[in-house]
Length: 237
Image (cartoon, rainbow, N blue to C red):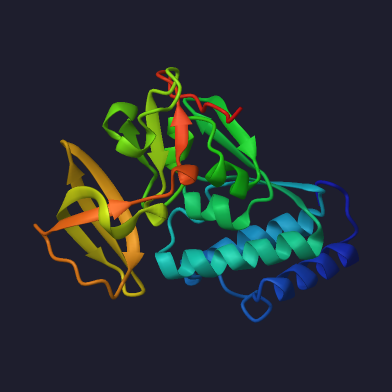
């Protein structure tokens, strides 16, 4: 009405949007009669009805449980593709950012840290903050001086980063002590201690490891990320 859209067109948009988000059988209900997921679908339908090229969503899934968040992520992504919308989506949830975005703008204290495709941020983080913000578990960050395999790196390198999935159990690697074990079914996260530093490794869920056990781990030096003393990435020459 505010935009002076004719009533017939308003009704047509309403019906179309309701069908797209699966609310066409619930139009007679009041907001209090809708579930959390249904209320989020109402918000999506309102964006569709507005028929604008850009849609802003500010943490739309923050109050939903994990199962419903996963369902709504898929729903929002599908609608964005089908409607060819430019969507600006604000979230603190890295899963939402990584699974839904074409481009991610990573912010810290109101300042842009890095911009790029999800894979770019994950594979080549620009700072230690970016490296540890994305990834579950986050990237391990160690002082260069305690990493034997990289003792010959340039003087400007202050810290070394290695993703947990890149660490492997081996027979002749770096000795560590298992401090905690997170069994996740298909995979297991080992939390290990090495010279007063904690490392996490993501390994096969069938691996037989016990808390307090001494293990040997290794990784390919090519999988390491190098950062200077300010926490900025050092690009390979």
